[in-house]
Image 1 (tube, rainbow, N blue to C red):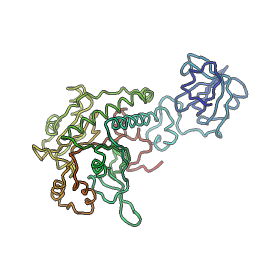
Image 2: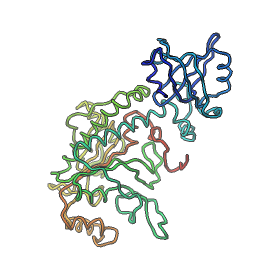
Image 3: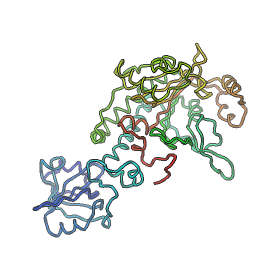
Image 4: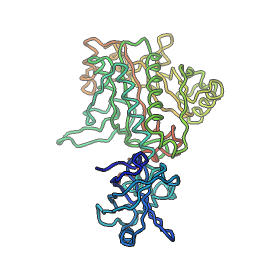
Length: 429
C-alpha cells in the first residue's frame, strides 16, 4: 500500500511503497539520490546498485515512478529519514525536460513564461503555494458562514439581463437569443434571503472590462454572502470581520507549509475593524472633497493611517457617495447623499465591497425612476418580484478570492496566485 512522503519518518525500519514525480536526481562519487515529490512534499531515496542507477539515468525529471524500499534514519534527509535498497518502477514513459527547472528552490522564469507553461509550472512548490493558500481560505470561508447559520447556494452564470452592476458584460448567443455571463450573483443572492435568510456562494464572475492592471481579471472567484434582518451595514461588516478571521485561521492551520515557502507571516484582524466615513477618508488622504471615489493612492494613504494609528492592516471606509453605488444600495438615513455601504481595505488596497440593500418595493421603484428606468421593465421584473412579497432589511458583501490571496502573500500581480488567469490578453492555457 502506498504511503505519502510525509509519513516516511514514522516508518523507520519498515518496507514501504511511495509514488510520485522524480523531482531531482543527484549523482555523487559513491552514491546517487532520487528526490521524489508527491502532494505532501519531498522524500530522498538512496540509489547504489548499477542496475538501479542505469534505470534512473534513463528517467528524466517529472517521470512518474513507484518506489519500494526500506526506511532508514538519516538526520540529513527530509524529515530525518530516507528510503534505501529501492526498487524503482516507472509508471509512465520517461518525461520530457520541463520548460522550468522545478527542482530549484525558486522559480527563475518570468510571469509570462510561468503562465504560458502553467500546467507544468504549477507543479513547482513555490508556484502551487498560492493555490494552497486559496484552498485553505475557501475552507475557512465556508466553515465560518456555516457556523453562522448560512446556507450555501449556487446561482446561474448565464443570465438574460446585464443590469447587476456597472461592469461591462460578455454577450452570448443563447439558442439564437441574447444572454450574458453573470457579473455577480447579486440579484439571486438577495432573492434567496427571502428563502433562507442567510446565504453564501463561491463561484466565478465575469467582467468584460478592458483592464490591463496587476489587480484585475476578466474572470475571478467571488465569495458572496447576503444576510437578512440587519440594522444597517455595520451588521454586515461585523459578519465580514468574523469571516476574514476564520479564513486567516484556516490558512494558518491548513497551509502552513505554503506560507513557509512563500515567507509569509499572517496578519491579525482586530476585534473591531477601524472605520472611516468616506468624507473623512478623503481629508485624511488629502484628496479633493468632491471626489466620488478613492484613488489607489488614497487607499494606500488610508491603509498607512490604519496601520500607524490602530496597528491594523484592515480598515473600512463607509458612506461612499450614492452616485458611485448600484441602485439597490440603501442610502444613509441621516443624509441620502451618502450610502450605507463600505469598502474594506487590506494593506492599502480595496478587498471587499459590502453594504445594506434596499428592501422595500416602493424604494426600488423610486430608485429606478430616478435613473430614468422602470421597475416593470423585463430586466427588473423577476428580480423585483421578491420585494413585492415581503423582504427583511438585508445586506451583504463580496470578496475577490484571488485579490485576497495576492494581498496576503505579497504577490505583485494577482495572476501569480490564479491557476489559469483570464484577462485582456490571455485565454489559454
